[in-house]
Each structure stands twice: as structure tokens, then as C-alpha cells.
Amino acid sequence: MTAADVIVPEQSDPPTGRPERPMAARNWRIGITAAIIIAAMWSWTGLDASFQDVLDAPGKGWNIVKQMWPPDFKTVVDRGAVGKIFESLYVAWIGTMIGAIISFPLSFFGASNVAPAALRVPIRLLFNAIRAVPELIVAMLLLTVTGLGPWAGALAIGLHSVGTLGKLSTEVIETSDEGPLEAISAAGGTFIEKMRWGMVPQVLPTVIGYWLFRFEINVRASAVLGLIGAGGIGGELVSQLNFRNFPQVGAVLLMVIAMVLIIDTISGFARRRIIAGSGRKIDDDDHNASTEALAGLLLGDSIMRPNKPND
Image (tube, rainbow, N blue to C red; front, top):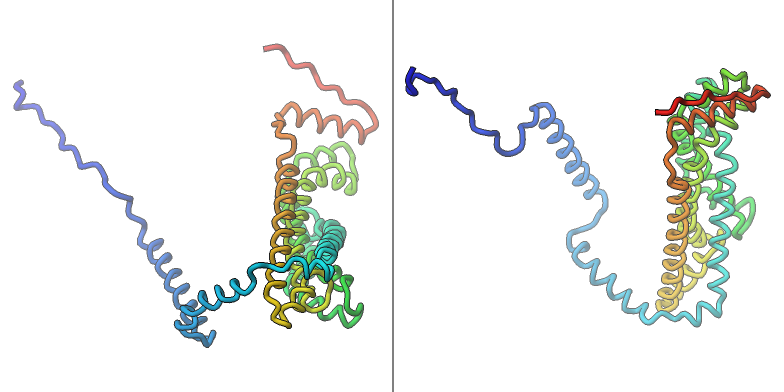
């Protein structure tokens, strides 16, 4: 056999570029993109604005910024702006506490792995109905009951937080691990004991993180509620805007920005720390040990783990 008799198989060229997407997926992406563009064009027609307005907006905005500089901190401080800043914090904090205290127990009745459908569906509808009404509308309704002041703002933020925190807490509960609950059930634990010792320790760090995140949002909302007389720094802002005192407006805005940045930084660090915990990885032996110890406490006796043989 000579070298000429050897048949060498032809090598195909290596594929170049990205692999082709299926035709159905490509058409789907094109359809979504076209729908977004059509919706944007249709929405633009309802704004009653021209492209010239868009081009003129940066210049008009810059003129207002120039009128705010330099900010007049002395005047707004003399008018009690610092106290109103803290009032906004009080409103946000009390509102967050109201939302957390009410939403946490309700979220268990809205979770599919805890409550039956007859109880779960009404609770979920309640959360959706609460979230559908903005805090500003709720505060305007409450002002007719409580009168002007920060209490109306705290109640409005608290009620709206119930819907948001309840929805988030319910999703956390539904994604929890069923193992500890099964261990407590096998040990003869009641429903309350399963929730207290098997569910709450799992979900509480994440839920507290959501509470802190909601507090950050409520700090911004409390500043807005002051515009309608529901307490906070917003009242001072709208007062200065009415008289076109732009240096004072700039000072108030900078104080609000500083407050929000400080709260976001502190709350963000606390959320990351709570969710991450101590950073120690829990292995299977630790998990089994804690489960067996919990079962022993519920049964009233001690469950000893067999010694592992040395490797």
C-alpha cells in the first residue's frame, strides 16, 4: 500500500461566529422589540410634548440650578429645617415598624406552603389591594381623619408598607427549606412549634433585610408626604418653592440628599451583614446536629448522635 492509496477524510472548517438562534426564538425577540417600540411611540403621542421641549429642558434645568447656588443653609436652619429632617426620619421609622409588625404574621397566612387556599387567596388579595394605592393618596385620605401632621404620614407609610413587605415576606417563606419542619413534625411538634423553631429562624434574616430596604424607600417617601402637610422636610421645601427662594430650595434639597445617602449607606451595610451572617459555612454535620438537638428539646429527652468513625 502506497501513501497515495490512503484516504484522508476531509476536515470541515471550524465554525465561525456565534451559533444561529432558532427561528422561533429570533421571531419572538423581534416581536417583543417591535411591541416595545410601538408602545413607546404611542405613549409619546399622549404626552403632548415636542422634540423642541426635550432639547430645551437641559438649559431650563441648568438655569434653575444656577439660581440655587450658593445654597442658603443659614436661613433654612433658622427656620427649623434640621428638626424637620429628623421628623421625616421619625415618620419613616414608625411607618416601617407598623408595616413590619402587621405584615410579618400575615405573610405566613399568605404562603402556599403554610396556609390553605381559602386563607391564602384573601391575604394575597389584601396585599395587592394595599400596594395598588400610593402612599400620597393614602396620606391625603388620612389627613381628613388625623389632621395635618406627621402622624398621618406615618400611618400612610405603614399601611402601604404592609402590602409590600407582606408580598416579599410571603415569597421568602415559600422558598424556605422544608427539612427542619419535617424534623419537628417527626418529633411531635405542633404547627406553632414548626413555625417558631423551623420557619422563623430561616426567613427572619432575609425578612429583616427587606425591612431595612423598605425603610430606605420610606425615608424618601416621608420627604414627599411633607408636600401635602403630612410632616417632614417636604413642607419646608414646598414653602420655599412657593416664594421662589431658590437658594433656600437648594439648601433643603442638599440636606435631603445628605439624609438619604447616610441612611442608604448605614442600612445597606446592616442588610448585607444580616443576610450574610457571620460568614461561617454550615456543613451537613452542623445541620444534622442542630436538627437532632431541636427534636430532643421538643421530645423532652436527649438524642445522642453516634460517633463518626475516624477516617
